[in-house]
Image (cartoon, rainbow, N blue to C red; front, side, top):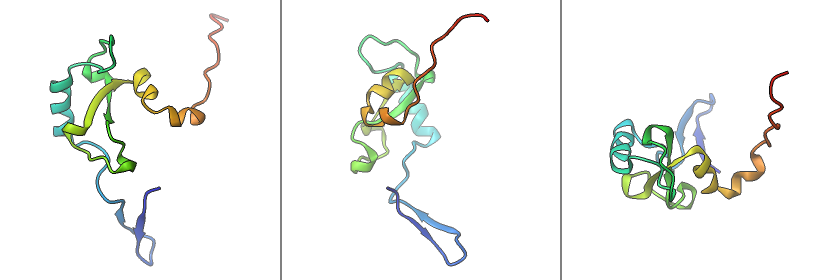
Length: 97
């Protein structure tokens, strides 16, 4: 849960305790440092990866480079097994109609 502070008109005044997403500069630095997906054996380039908090943000993890790693979409999902119940199963590919 993320606490959201609003005024009487419903305008958002504050969301949460800190930022959850990396800044553009942090992301560029992470791309240079990581160069690829950090999952063993994966060679997806950094530009095709997503940042991941090593210590999850909701558990008090910080949004900074020491706490960040890059994972491609497939491997990032593996880092979050708790979200599996929210993912829709893909329909099997039936080929050309």
